[in-house]
Length: 307
Image (cartoon, rainbow, N blue to C red; front, top):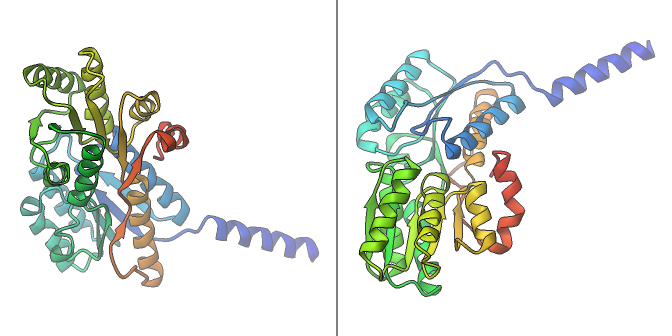
């Protein structure tokens, strides 16, 4: 009898440690899971699925394509999941699909982009950072470090959130800022930035909007030109960019803790499906300024796909 009771206690402990919840959640993001930034989001999604026991699918268009993304949201709505997580880089293009989900009674949480429109589209809350505010803080910090003339490297033209980052940077920086539009190819970014710096030697500040896609190539461009006077900062983290901060080749990175965005969105929707629980407002996952004194602490976690 004692052995049987002990076995039952052990089984109960296992169930509590690994809850099984019959719920389906779909995540539709504008960033592909093979993108270093979005792979961290997906890692958070998968960890939350493991911890809660819900079934989760992560979907994204093959490229930055709002028509394709809206179709993915529509397909998710047709499945009638217990929760839907979306990023909102373009509210005009994605709004109707998100509103259809809300009208169908599907709980929606937005992550990463769309903090300014999330509530108006019917989402329960947004998990992320205020992009313009983050840009302003970065710009003010770079001006404080002596920056006078800047370039904002935008590697995803058409993403409203990145436009807000550049606008905030320009406002906080105070000096003249030029937006350099590029694609996601690091080689292209390095080449275009080198050309821009050669064309205007007065530029002393570079604000990149993604660490692995634009930040690392920006550091490479500045180093190739021998311009040690140019300060480079970036949104988001990568192991390579953090190493550049530690080495003194970059000023800082802005961490929005995207692992939390994926994890908390799934966790909240799982709790909602099981208990009807939901936080009462948005969750600011950033911004956090990562300078040289902090970079060494997070570089290992970044390499592991957590930071």
